[in-house]
Length: 380
Image 1: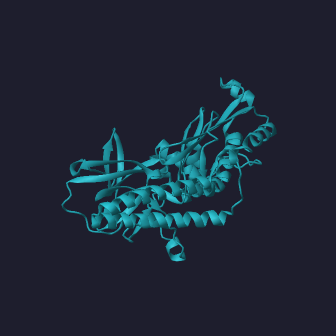
Image 2: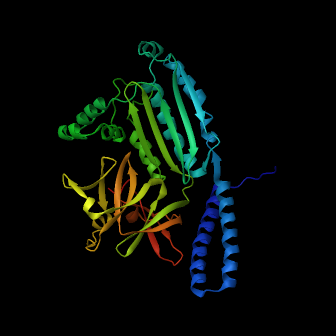
Image 3: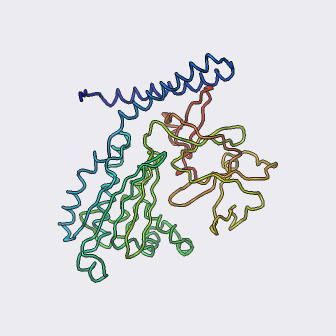
């Protein structure tokens, strides 16, 4: 198979041109529906098929397998384990999974950081593991899998886990939370403090970063790509980090929603599900609106209120898009769901717009209108 080199700048330009073509395709589709011409509909059908194939080919050219960055990990883990007199079985699953080149370049450092933390502060020394009734050798595993609209990368270890008590104590000492807040935090909420800037529960400084140092950088980098990070841990049993990443940063699968007279896009990587509930099911806890699902309180955020729009007095049922933020589910109350849409992302270029919280960019619809893309991670 013959191959030729192509610069990344040319790839980016090609992707931008395909994006413009997709936007124009949407516009032609709308005009065709208005004209009600059968011949035009047939021509449009061929046009859509060709642009879709072109789009898929360009995306495929940009894709590189995860092995592109994971091939250095086995030796790194082996060297780190030897330096700390630890025995570690390192397993990689799904290294053939492909991601956009731009995403792959960004996730290398976060993965290295999580693995180094797992070796340094996760896996115990063999003698300690035997005393705890564990196998002498610890296990660290990376698992990558492709879901419908995103790639899921899990980094798991069977080490000592994360102590939420130590996290609360460290957060109090740093002044990140008050004593009252520390007492009210659930286990799940407390463990999320690991992503607070500068938080560390490491008792000693080593060549490797303590668990918590730099975790805010990991989180920020993943979220900047339109993804999310979730952590689960059980003291004495180990930890699991889940990175949820879009397959490409150039193109999103999004849910279009209506709020007032405006339309907004919510990336599918952030959406858990959408539901409809009766107005009477809304309860108030400590001044917050919540609904109870499976015996758990789901906090609600009315986008009308967030965008300072008047409340809809006619509503009888609430349309709710449940999104995941920092391992916690939140319900966005919208006026209506407008359906799934493939959107081309236009990042904010101006310094003024770059500082605007709550939005990850914008997209242009077929009719030329601009729709803002909600950034779930920074909206609240």
